[in-house]
Every structure is written in structure tokens, then in C-alpha cells.
Image (tube, rainbow over all chains, first blue to last red; front, side, top):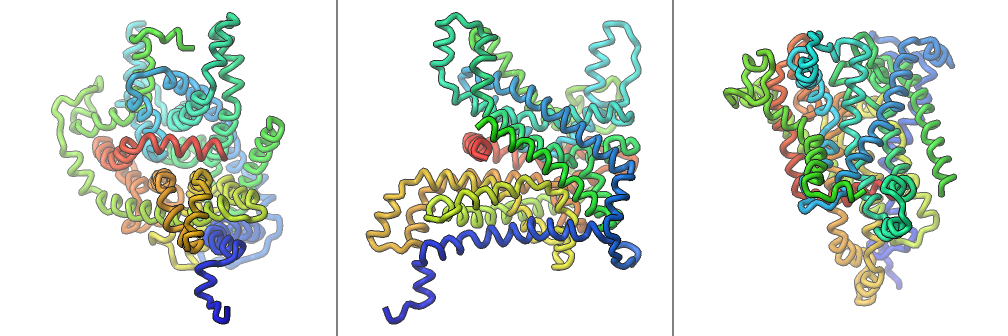
Length: 304
Length: 276
């Protein structure tokens, strides 16, 4: 074994060396795109750092944080983000469960239903936002047209709803769009869960005389709980980051009534180039999502 | 729940509800894209176009460099997919096959990276790319997209690698293959379906991404489709037939991909999802 060259070692390395080589690219990228940015983010949040107007870098300690807590825009964006999460996550779960139950029926041809669940998932969020902005158009939108047709029989000459031009309605329209866009992913995960429930459970319940309603609550829901939790975690984490749909539907308007935290951070840093304050906002959002993740992880621990 | 839907007609209604929910938005955009501007602003609104026209499609390509955006999206999504697969296949093999201590911790680290809200990392990523001189380049998007795809690709590939019997690999090594040789000649070909599934998921993820594409590449030469399509609207004008035509052009590639590989996509999604 006189000449064990480097090349031979590369060809047949030890288990540990091979593991290191194989994992290196993944962790190098995680360091560059996740770990270093997190450190940099926290560092930046202690500085007055504006890229516009040639302003220098000034250490300001916790001043940015004090400003954040007094910033009405921050609280408005936080309120909107939390509300969107609280409305659209359960909304998508309920609609997704309905879609999954319908899609789980024994159809002869499975592909139309499957494709109908996949298409909304594959559609970019930005496209969904644009399409639904057109749906909710005050004058020429299909939503107002359907409402008009449905109510014209009742005789009421109602004004068309100005969906995207009134704060409350704009918020509603955005939530409906998010629920439509995300419920099909929920449905796909729940459908896989439904298909794993053994048929024998239902047959046994049938013999015992349980009603369909009882079977749903006593068998389907408990058996589906693991899938539901996984789907909820994924959905909540993405709901907290909501950006694309409000950005393409209303740009946060009217006023800033539909502005989310992600949009506020984007506006502060990319549009106004105020990196110091934007970083502080991002740290606050980061802490918020850590709390939510920790809450879920604790719940999972209890269930397992 | 089946007895309510025992009859064929009720089952048909159930299927119709799911299908309408999924397809209606795309269908409505298709109809809009075929209408003339004059028909669009007539009231009450029409559902089917009276005089179908393709003029909006021509305008979609001339008002904005739509073809360029399409090419950019393809270049970014394809290279992000290729690199995501390479990086996550290496990592997944190490996790699934090597006798490493703390392999569960390694997997958790990779998966946990998807828990960080991307938008909070936007600022430092923007700064990093600026320092490296990578703003307005394909690389600026490909690098973060690899990380974006890493968790789901690694999860899918780990479970595929684990399903390949270790004996096959050992047999190859007894027959004189090196460890690397066994990996390349035995494991990779057998894992091809898994690699493919992970690839589609990575492609869709990269194709759809909006926030980074919007923030890092503002130069039209590197703009991707989702960002480019928002630019048809003027400050006060929304040329909806043209936007709709552009949307149809942008949706078709991804819809065809999904239609062809739907079973794989569903398998990959639920696998990646349920294990995470």
C-alpha cells in the first residue's frame, strides 16, 4: 500500500469522509442563503443603515426596535398578517377537506379530478392574484355579474360591490383568493391520508350500526389527524409569509388596509432601501413565526 | 360517506364541483383572452366571446418581451432544478445509506431550513447578491431556489434511496465496484423515478417563485414570467384581455407538465408532505 494517492481516497473514501463530501454542497448553500443571512439580519437591525442618499452606517443599539413598536404601519401589517393566517388556514382546511372527500369517491376516470386539484397548486400565486383581481373587478368582473344575476330576481337594484376599492371588501377578496389557491394542496395531502384509512374500519362500524355521520367523526377525522396537522403546519408557515396575492391584487391598498408584514418589509428595504429598519421588521416577523412553529412542534410532541 | 353518492349522477355532480373549482379560473382567463376590448367593456358582461380574436396574443408578445420572460423563467427553473437534484441527491444518499451518527439531526437541519420565512432573509440575500455583483443574473435566483427546493427534494430522495435494497449495492461492491461506482451504476439508475418526482416539484417551485424574482432581478433581461406579467398594467390601465392572453401563454407549459406527470406529482407531494 505504498502509494495510496489522493485519487484513490476519493474513489473509495471512508464512510465519514464520504459523508462529509456528500453533505458539503447542501450545507455550504444553507450557510450562504440561510445561516449567514440570519446573522447578518440581526446585526443590521442594530444599525441605521440606508442605501439611499449616501447616508453612512451608524450604530443605534435598540433604537430601531423602539421605533418598530411605535410604528402604526408595523402593527397594521402584523394585524393583517395574523388575520389572514387565522382566516385562510382554517378556511383552506375546511374547503380542502370537502374537496378531498369529494375526490375520494370511486370515480371511473380519476384524472379530471386529480388534475383539477393539481392545477391551482401549480399555478403561481402571482397569477392567482391577477386572475382573481379580474374576477372581482367592480364593473366587468364575473363575481359581481353572478351576484347581480342572483339578486335581480329579488327586485333589488343593488349597486355593484367595489371589491378591491373598499378596505373590508378587499381584505375579504384576498382571503377568498388565498383559500382557493391553497385549499387544493390541503386536499391533495388529505386525500392521501383518506386513502390510507383501512376500509375494514368502516365495515366494522357499519356492522355495529354506526351512522355515516358518526363514522365521519369517529373514524375519518381521528384517522386523518396526522395528515391534517402536517397540512396545517405547512399552510400556517406560508400564510405568515403572504405576499404575492395581496401584492398583485391590491398592492396593499386601499391605503395600507391589506398590507402584510412581508409587503412592509419588501417596501421598506427594496423600495426605500432602508436596510437597518427593514432588518428590524424582519427580525420581529422572524420571532413571530418562531413562536408559531414552536407552538405546532409542541402540539406534535403531545400527539406523538 | 359513500352511500349518499352511490348513484352515478350524484357522483358526477361531486366530480363536477371539484373540476369546476379547479378549472374555472383558467377557463375564464382563456375566454377573456379571446374577447375584443369593445366586447370586454360592454354591459352586461358576456360569457362566451362573440367574435373570438387572437389579436390579444399578438399584443401580449409585443407590449412586453414575453418571449424573453418565458426564456428567463425556463433557464432559471431548469438550472435550479438540475442543481437542486444534484445537491439533494448527494445529501439524501449520505443520510439514507451511510453509517453516520446524527443522521436524523442532519435531515432535521435541512428540513428546518424551510421553516424560515424567506421574506425575512430577503434583505441579507439582497445585500449578499449585491456584494457579489450578482443582482440581475440567473445565478442570483438559482442559488436561493436550490435552498428553497432542498427540503422537499431531500425528503423525497431519502425515502426512495431507502427503498432500494442495500444488498444490490453490496453485490456490486463484492463484484469489484468502488463505493462511488456502486452509487453511480446501481443506486442512481434505480432511484430514477424518485429523482424525476423530486425534479418536477423543484421545477414548479422555481417556476412559481415571485418575491425574490421581483426583488433581485429588476432588469428586463433577467425578469421571470410571474414578475413580467404584472407589468402589463399601467398606473391607471388594466388591459385585461392582453394580461389574460399572457397568462394563458404562461400557464400552458406548467399545465402540460402537470397533466403528463400528475401521478408522480401527487406521489411526491404527499410523500414529501407526510414525512415532513
